[in-house]
Length: 372
Ligand SMILES: Cc1cc2nc3c(=O)[nH]c(=O)nc-3n(C[C@H](O)[C@H](O)[C@H](O)COP(=O)(O)O)c2cc1C
Image (cartoon, rainbow, N blue to C red; front, top):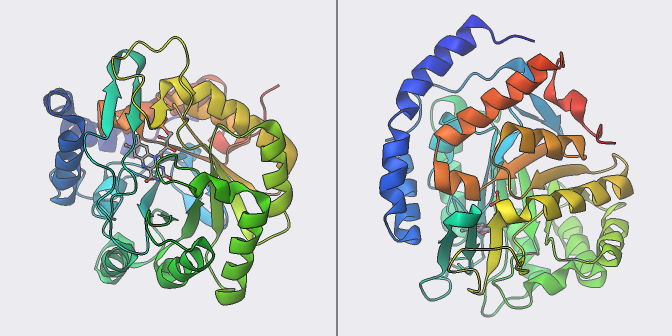
């Protein structure tokens, strides 16, 4: 499968746009990480980055999952655009899907700063943001505006937008908060993710326990039976037995899929970054293998009955292909994007197409579950 002329011309246009990014990114890296992040979101939302028209990906990159069509298999993971402030620009710079959030019922400011740390030597990030966000009502208003605006996002035909929901640090009642948010945001979301795995909200990860999870799922089903596809995002720190119990719990319910994985609270011995012992969730290169192993384990257990999204440590096209070969229908990344910015997504897609070309593979989805 060769790139078509249109793709090449379009890549050239985007390439010119992207060529200024190494300079911008090295500038952003000199800032305190959270300031740099906020500036990136601001520039994106002001339309300072991104092409003039929707990205045209090679048909070889198109994947389908949960009845949704993704133009390419690489999405931006939750946490980057917590408030749905940059959905359209994130689509324009070439992601195959955008997951916004984590959003909570009420706005909250999150943990005290500093709470975001770069481990540059390790290609990693540690965060303990603590779900700083504007709340579900403001997010719903933003997503409604996008849906009602002119342009490709008017219909659901362009790229899927998922909403990742969580709970407030204070005054939470998960059994009512999750269903309430599903009811409120369902009409604007192509899929909804129950985040039960961030390490920075006390008690959240306990909700992965089958009893708690079943109660929440049942309440959602009873109150909002027509909800969009529902996924559950899991921590990479679960034991094999815990993973098995979760899969058993969700397999015959209203859950369409799982996201493997969120950040880890573990710290591999080989980390070099000065901030390696900061409390919080570790992401990026050091979690790639752990996340992929968990994905593979879940793929063996689910045997195609659930959609699987692979997330954790993706930096290259080969990393995306590795996740797909281990059972992923779609993939997401965050940390590598924080380091490299928009050129990353173009590089990754180019690398995937090159690998497919070299091996005479028609579509990236043909590689699903082919790891031996
Ligand atoms: C700064 C930061 C904030 C994050 N916030 C969230 C969040 O709000 N909700 C969530 O589900 N995951 C969040 N994550 C986890 C990512 O979505 C992703 O699961 C994890 O970082 C692994 O992917 P990566 O190695 O490509 O970064 C966050 C990650 C980072 C680095």
